[in-house]
Length: 326
Ligand code: UT7
View 1 (cartoon, protein in one colour):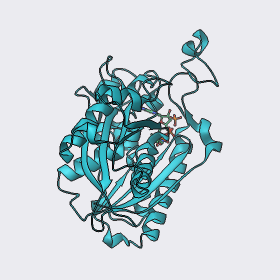
View 2 (cartoon, helix red, strand yellow; view 1 turned 60 degrees about the horizontal axis):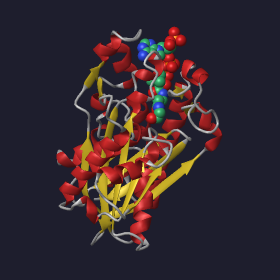
View 3 (tube, protein in one colour; view 1 turned 90 degrees about the horizontal axis):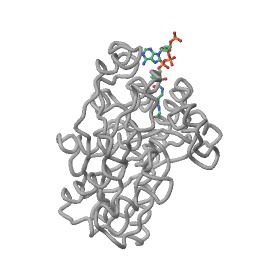
View 4 (cartoon, protein in one colour; view 1 turned 45 degrees about the vertical axis):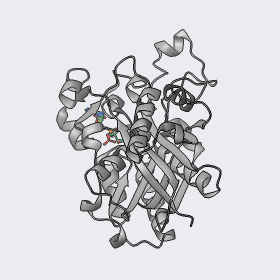
């Protein structure tokens, strides 16, 4: 394994908070239902004039500042998102423009909630192969703009935010010890945004049908998420020859506390090793893992040398699991 290091992390979280009590006034739901069934208490909502690239650019700036670098020191920018600024160009290109850069490669990874871990996998490969030396990986979403605010079964779940990491060549034994990723496109229509692409271009009818919003069969996603997240984490741990006792922190994708708990139990990791930000931010899709990693670092739960197991699952379906030595 060639050594890699996450040399900086940063986040961007809108200041506006939407609580479960606020949602009670918008749809037929209750704080009790949302808290018990999901573990979410509040989430952040971006202002109308804020797009995914604004949050991503801000998170990358913060991660670069944390690393003691200027954004121009990056030689590639990878954005994991399902809520792209535009169908083309990529959100990463909008981000690059907002950072005032010209030159670094910039592209999106469309892997839903697994987007940040897919991006990290690519960043590692670019650095290990010598193609890049410093890569900014960011997971960012403005879910609030693709949620149907009249559908209580989805609108209570999501939030907006972005989290970034700067990945560089390292020294010693830090890096991605092992990882496992995959996808099952046969289940693409279980969780998707039906309209706006070439399958169903925007028409007055698609707008009327709310076809530009999140459509999800929640219980199917739930079942597959539990299975895939625990398997990805377990396989990565086995490949890295890491036992549950060796793990300092478990950082799963944060969509539903019940999914996270079962995935944790199946990976045989104790409750106190699981890091949770879900109650504060809801499901920010590709942003949940990097935001949680950043907050865990800020709190001192991740230090140099810490062994971190992270795993995610999302639309596609896609999944990923990694064992990182910080
Ligand atoms: O990031 C990856 C993408 N997403 C996910 O990982 C989400 C995965 N799925 C889930 O987290 C869960 O399936 C949900 C939280 C979406 C739903 O929880 P559930 O325990 O699977 O509930 P359900 O869909 O089986 O619905 C149970 C009941 C239904 O009422 P009836 O038919 O039993 O009378 C729903 O209509 O709860 C009702 N319900 C609600 N009630 C109050 C659904 N949403 C709400 C709500 N407030 N917001």
